[in-house]
Image (cartoon, rainbow, N blue to C red; front, top):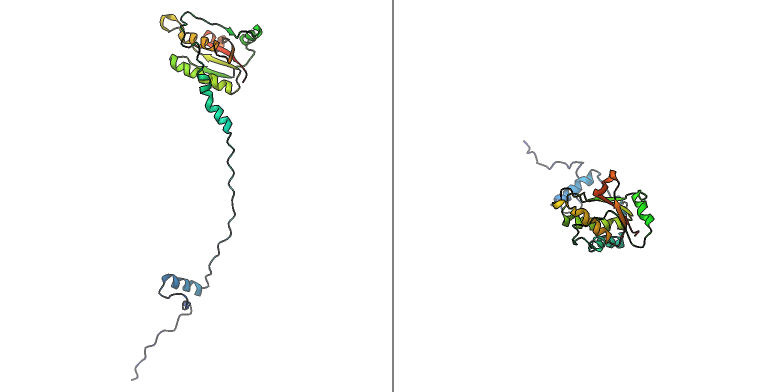
Length: 200
């Protein structure tokens, strides 16, 4: 009986030997050889569009410097705040040299109130700081007519409207304030003051 001779199976038509330049022991090389035998081709990267991001808006550096300097510019003008004004009671005020018609117009509501500040219930130290900042930003923003609510001081010690007097005396000594008077009854009456500011 003839011995059967063992022979290696014929190569599969789907497998082709790896190129000579590619090491057979490399897993990556075997994988690429298999893909190439199956007709797989490398996909070349498609060109990508260059997207230009929108440029940032220009920074108004001078405006930022102006806004940063506003509180310090007018907060330092606090004349009259620390004066003894227990008996003072300024109902209205008109800067010297200005025609009396300005105060009459202010009392009649000729100028619309463009900004308001409510100091009612604050301590005098807090009110002082808030008043300075408010007037600074109001003038910087171009407001001409403003209203400041200070209360009537009914609950103040000895019945003296301390905050009301401090606010009004301080306003009368600030150069940016041209005139002020009691607010209309619907807007606070004697518990608030309407002030006309110098144009910036």
